[in-house]
Amino acid sequence: QVQLVESGGGLVQAGGSLRLSCGASGSIFSITSMGWYRQAPGKQREFVAFITRGGSTNYADSVKGRFTISKEIAWNTMYLQMNSLKPEDTAVYYCSARIPPNNYWGQGTQVTVSS
Image (cartoon, rainbow, N blue to C red; front, side):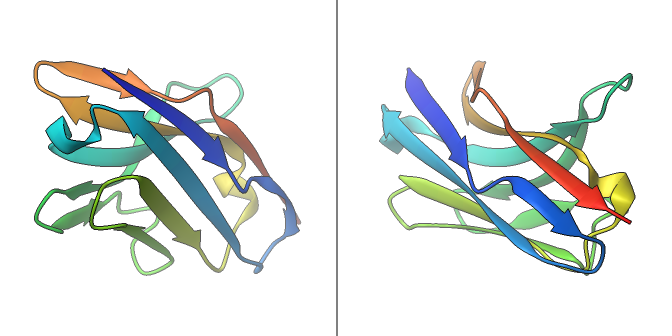
């Protein structure tokens, strides 16, 4: 089991940047991958980015070239650097960790981008 806590959300103007962090504790050495998801009001939760134990990454088309996912070697912290933010990036951002066959979630952090 793993516990996840997100931080770093806030209010930013369009074109600005934010860096989200996800602190992990518990059975972190069993984590095989971690990711970021987001949920805007009235919409379903959607994939943003993920990173594997080996450092491979994948991004949603909507954030490619603007967002960068990274992690500490020991999995204790994961980051999402968000640049060139757009109003449509406004959402609650959730951190997720996979320990097969389970997925664990944080409580989310609000990101609001004003136009």
